[in-house]
View 1 (cartoon, rainbow, N blue to C red):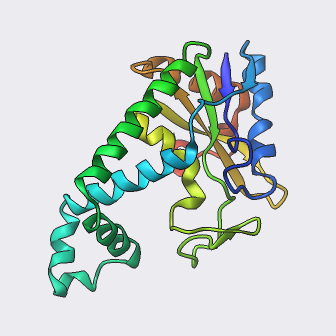
View 2 (tube, rainbow, N blue to C red):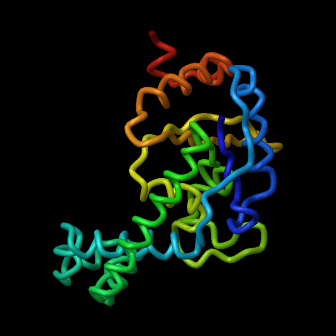
Length: 219
């Protein structure tokens, strides 16, 4: 059984067509004997996003990039997004970090509960189709403004925080011919199960064979 989380009941801003392309992958899983159902962990996703941001700010403050920020000569070489992360991290309190850790633990517990019913989770790999390479990041999605440079890929943030095994796979193409992918997430330590289902999905869909990467095409 596979749980499809989609856009968390409309909470995530999503470009029109993205969810439809992702849902088109369900037929391949069903052909492999799986059932795909809409379900998601019962938790406030705003809290989860806040915890993700806090962990990210904190990681950059205590990592090697802070040394680059601390030196005015190298700080000017950092992109604005990194400076934003570090400066937000400098404003964190021990209480903030502790709360973020508690939310992460609670999220993991809720995800573990979901896996008592389902074997895998499916989610979009992004909330927008590939965008112009000259853009730093999308300023808005379907009329909803993005308040940070990684909001357009918020769909991956909750699962990154779990450290569970996950695989990115192609789902298909939108009306403009641009690709979209899905994330396949498995239970804790179920890396082999994720790889096996991903390999079966790849064989069933043939996406890689239809447009093989150059290195694979040469073999």
